Image 1 (cartoon, rainbow, N blue to C red):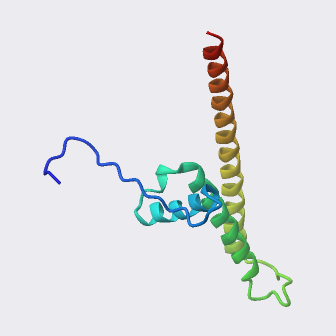
Image 2: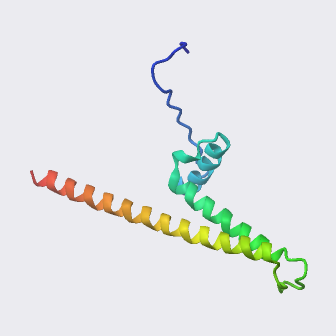
Image 3: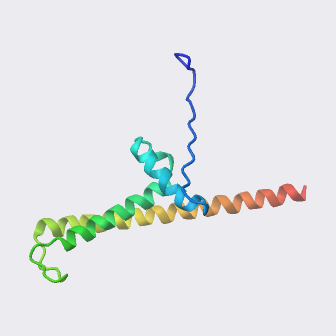
Length: 122
C-alpha cells in the first residue's frame, strides 16, 4: 500500500454465517463493526441491538434486587428506581427513533418505486 493514499480504503467483509442469508449475517456484521469501533456504519442494526441491551439491563437491575425472593422482586431502593426510570425513558426514546427511521425508509422505498414506474412509462 502506498503512503499518503489520497482517499479512503473500502473494506468489505462477508459475515453471513448461514445459508438463510442476511438476517443472521447482519447481527454478525454488526458485532464485528462494534469491535472495530465502527458500529455507526449500520445504524439501524445498531439501534436494535442497543435497544435490546437497554431492555436486558433493565431486567437485570429489576431482578437483581437482593430483597426479592422466589422471582418476586422486593422493594427497590431509590438508586435502582432512578436507573430503571432512566432506562425506561431511554428505551422509549430509542423505540420512537427506530420507528421514525422505519417510516423514512418506507417513504424512500415508495418514492423510488414511483420513480421506477415513471421511468418505465417513458
